[in-house]
Image 1: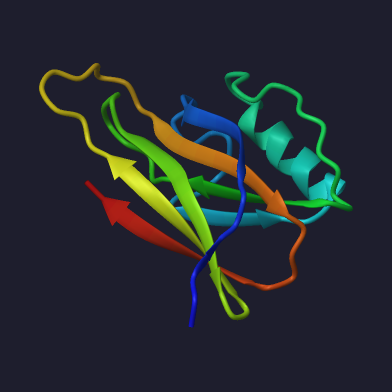
Image 2: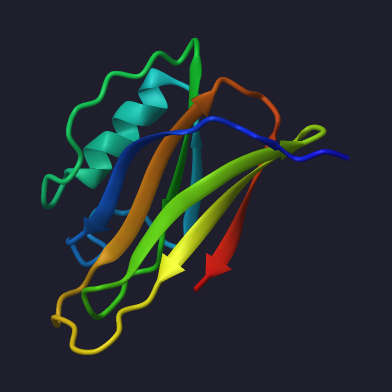
Length: 131
């Protein structure tokens, strides 16, 4: 079985700063197939501190993959969907976790990463990569 790379396009990456008030429990893997689903997520993400810029997505052509980490007590944590691959009928999104080293700011953060891939109905799995 050959693993093929799925071309992904970054949409947004960063941290929510609302101490969970956005209502996006983490860890949370989100697959978005419609404009309505995207608008609901966009609204939640911006409900406390606007973080997500408005992005136009063609949902006839694209599927969105988003990963939201748990709420962290310090700054410096990050997540990134670094690679998306496909084997047979399974798509795998690899999520890299970065842990702060040294001094970190005392602020509640919830790291997230959002990418788009070509439209798919295949099974999507998220796999952690810890470095």
